[in-house]
Length: 87
Image 1 (cartoon, helix red, strand yellow):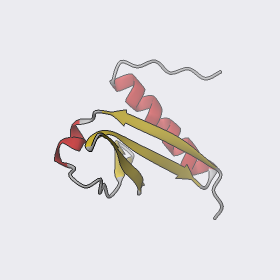
Image 2 (spheres, rainbow, N blue to C red; image 1 turned 60 degrees about the vertical axis):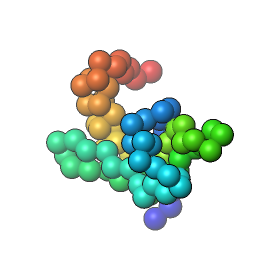
Image 3 (cartoon, rainbow, N blue to C red; image 1 turned 90 degrees about the vertical axis):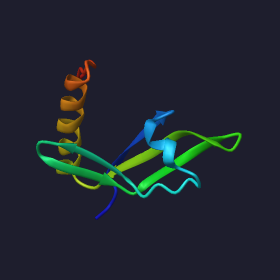
């Protein structure tokens, strides 16, 4: 199945980096009441040898994958006091 789109995430100074020594991060899992969304395209970014950020890419291959992510994003935004609007 062909890639239809991708989302890029950057998490500056996340707590998850406190145990990272060599940049090896196995993946990212997003969890909500529907289940999980996973990506293995994750890496640590270093500044002067110190982990400073996590960069992740989520690739969707179907309209249903995209719609599933959008439901997750809306729930996440709502539960974290963030706004969301469609243009």
